[in-house]
Image 1: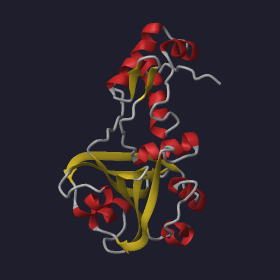
Image 2: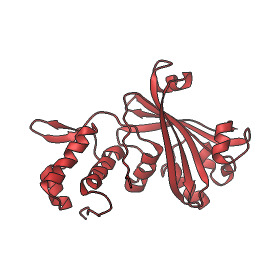
Image 3: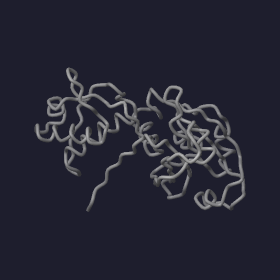
Image 4: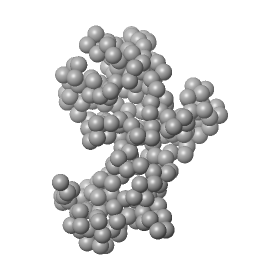
Length: 246
């Protein structure tokens, strides 16, 4: 079924968002061809000027490059995949990570909740919380690391959160399956920082090297925090997002 343009946002923004999500999810990999302007015109029923603006916007974000004799292809440049991207990717494709990336869970345990984690989860500081730490790799190269925290009470109904084995359906879907809670929204924050010893070890970089840090909250349909997370990525990776000004 061909995609259709709705009227909530300008058509070119909708098309850019669609192709961007395909790139971030790994549906389109580095070196893959992206639709030509003529193909965009046909698929989306838009004018040449709109299709051209799509390609220009993707190129400006560094997501695609022009290759003589081949047209426009996905860039090999790295983009950071945030918790939002992972949740949306598994909703769209059934996969958490692009085919070129994989994660290793290095810790899955009950640990005393630090004050910031306790505030985020709505529990008392120092009480046991579930801590899952992972490092994401592209090939053999570490590109990001993250720690997810959950209320320790989930250990009874979602015991696999305390195992380092990969959750095939992804953590969000596993929590929905085991608790009946529906994940409805999320919030991410990002800032620049210097790598700590742990972050430097995870990413195989120097202590103090510039990194992009983030933290995230995932809420259920009742507005309660299900997961609080913190993540870090090397300085070479971009994060893209768009928004509407009203």
